[in-house]
Length: 305
Image (tube, rainbow, N blue to C red; front, top):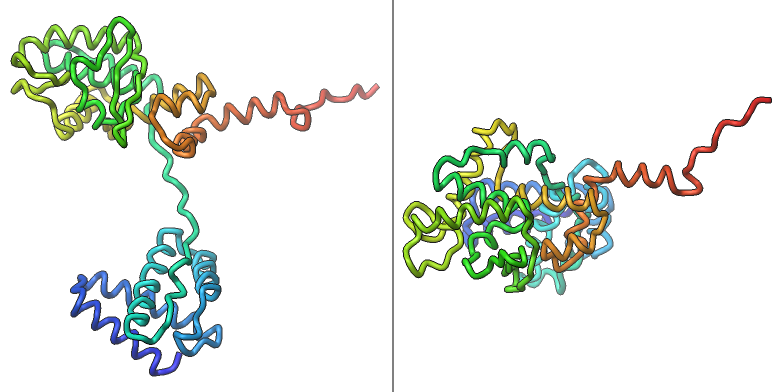
């Protein structure tokens, strides 16, 4: 790059520190990414920012990834470049931002953790010798039975539970309502809790789950109580409310192989969100493939005679 082109990086750095007042750490990260871009431009014979186009930047992103940068790191690198080129556009050095439509490679989606069936059974086989323990067991049984999000569970009112039909009416993301079944064990735990609830909740309180003060539980209380029970029950994992939803989905999918059904129960708008759970039963699917596919089945050994 020409000295004039490199000078724009210095001016951009002053803009970050002065106008945008970014932290020294973020400021240094931006300049480091632009230094990498400048070095790459030198290898490509690009000496002015105006000569950069979107194809150059796609190649830069691809080479960065091939050189060992993780997708998220490439995303950060492109974000810095995009911001710099937008600055040059503002300063009338560029007529358009060639990085505007350039995207980094997608990150691999983090696979959800789960409890196995034995760990879940150990956790739910907890003592219920006081009203709060009865409540906590009902909460965990319902989370596992019906795959609820924490916010959905907190928002439940008494009227949402239909013990006759063994269902619960849930308001999910986007205010979408779905009806999900409640398993036998969860229903028994809920009925036990409803008897204890009368000693805590004042008349007129609509919340299904209340605290010692008789008011609707908050998320932090539930998170803390679940983690505490996991420790007491000897579950060697960090157990949090969403882990029950992951476990519900993976165990149900393993048994039913019905991805669409699990999608409906979870309230996912896009089946791609549900597909993340299919990895959990991949070995089972691989066995089915090996046994059933005509090109995969092992042929019996030939009789040497």
